[in-house]
Length: 147
Image 1 (cartoon, helix red, strand yellow):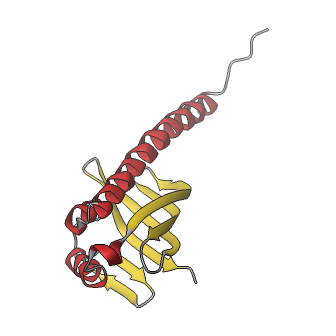
Image 2 (tube, helix red, strand yellow):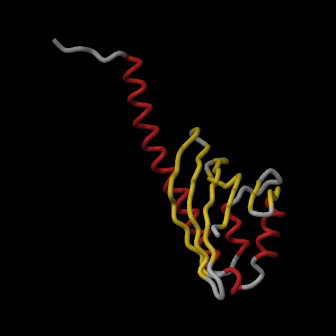
Image 3 (cartoon, rainbow, N blue to C red):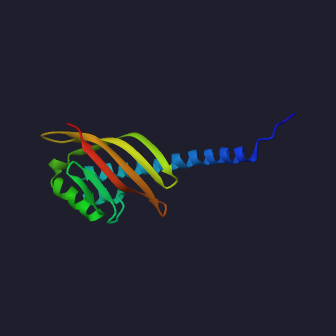
């Protein structure tokens, strides 16, 4: 005798498969943006690096000196802090974890390394991503340097 699956179970199964495929596609899109940011940084192009961020006064960047609000203020902070190729160094990201909170909201935890002279820098970051009209953007960045 063949047992029929409950219709609700079928819907959940289809949703799970669909969610998994969507997560993989979205994760690859976000990783692609991070790679573009690495490339921009290593080309000493902070403006191109900022393309990964939500261009809004509601963007928040939080570092050792506290939060900075807004895309322009975040860009200005980067340009002031990293005003030379020597200070920028060579950036490398390592992704440690990524998870979806909603279909259009993802969190990424990673590690950064800045190889530079005279002193390297490294630390961790948590990025909150949101999809706007099909484009993933960083809406919140909390970055902490390691000691």
